[in-house]
Length: 302
Image (tube, rainbow, N blue to C red; front, side, top):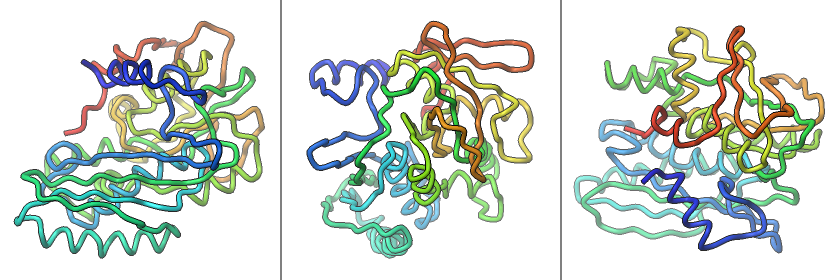
């Protein structure tokens, strides 16, 4: 059973008033303007045994921070759960040394958690943030344009490089995979200047994540391949494949305002068609309207 089908079943059991079928990156507690998200990272599934501990620490926080940011929030607190065995004891101490650096830099506090002995090394992260007006996926407007916070494809290429050659921290693509962007400041500035309606971070691939926005809001979205910012040095094949791969963690958001700020790129718009994602590549338009068809092609971690 696909992740998407499991999520739909869960949401049928536990419906809420802030989302429809496909949900958001965070739970939203309206009474307290609170955003809460959780991710679980498992060795062998989300990171390899020989990954540098500083990269594991960074990424385990970054993916959660990104969820809060993509819902228009400011991350403030983290709760951690670590599973480890004797082989990983030294890693755990180094993990928290790096957590301290990352949290100080991003004005985030670790406020609790749990440690447990486990045959598999894993990290569970809960991130808590706040927003007076969250960017709910169901709120894409009929006159909205689609914006992205930075280039994609570097993580896809970096993962390929790691698999072929190992971890090389002098390789810009490897760094893009191990140390994805944390866009707190950039997105907070945009949120102060413009009316943003909906957002999502690119964790499962640009195509799949934008289709989630389309389905949740019941809007059709058109994006243009030539307007998408990609990492320099990617082949055309890498560029196309990376849109289905994920782990870029750039933020995609929608607004009816004309946003021209540095580092923000307009890549498409909402169109008057049946719900789905329309990709314009040269003179051809490719239509995606089912998450299942993308999941067959997309990213399933390691």
